[in-house]
Image (cartoon, rainbow, N blue to C red; front, side, top):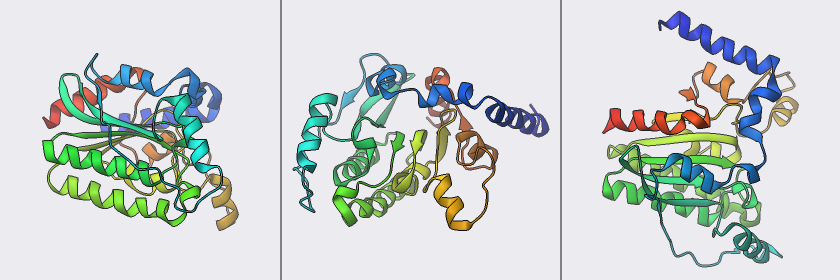
Length: 255
């Protein structure tokens, strides 16, 4: 396919998004309960290969935010996870990788101390064992209950990811719906290769906030995965059914 035909294909995909938004966006925005984090692992990792990291984190409530610890305990009981991310090592298409997946069901996968530290430790493990790092992102941003300490995770995760990449590590991010706030402004958009799911909302502030700030009407489809691919911020929009094959091809090319 030549460059002109490729541009036409991308334009047609974006046109389809404008004309049939509900149909195109449905796979990315259906309820979390219909596509769990375990479903993601089963779809991506080779059967029986995922081994979760069990990092030891002390309880955190730096602002002594009322009800915060109780809320986390409630969500831990419901989800079986300690925070808004799960990380481990596995194989994808036979290639060993470090895989981390953010869980929207846990406080919208907002980034606090524990989530940021999990990203850092996963990257450090990948660096030590010379493995590719793949992170599926989904987040509402920084966790307000941890104040400035949650915002500091942006700098910390970015620094560790940069160190990993500078030592030759392959870093792949897959942006799912939604990837916003401090997560989008840090490790989510630093991938050597950046993929996204169809219709995913990706950006820092929401479109309405941006329109109110700059006093202008934004283009249709602004901040959706297809729009970002059209403008060079995403390498490819990949459907869930094709995700494992796409990742396997990338790992094969970089092995």
